[in-house]
Image (cartoon, rainbow, N blue to C red):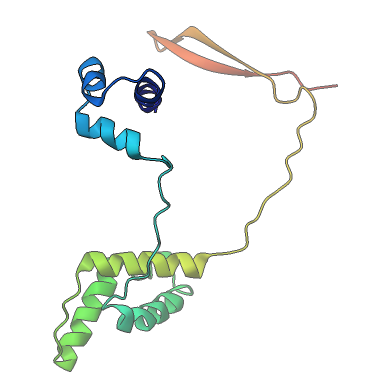
Length: 161
């Protein structure tokens, strides 16, 4: 950003030409012209667009499987890979072609899990008594079984009375 201000200052205040500024700064003339013509240097915010995906049809099926998994033990829940393979098997059973990638299904599984596991934010008030959180850090040499170690240690502060 400093380069931009410098280029604009030299052109508008000192009256230097674009070619002269390019020689002095080492920037390309097109770059200098771009900086001189641009009025707003803030980056536009990206527009979030919901892309229609071929897996929209499978969204409810995946969500139902993951909702059922909430009651199952952790090790027995569907992984994204298992969801993908199960969708492929169902499409094959129906005689349909399944042309979605495993990566696409994995992204859908992750987003559905985030939706299902989303809870209200929980916070606990933190209370620290004055002087109760002091500690000392240090480095020393330890001997263990005749072997010398250089290590760090933490000494908690004495209790506040």
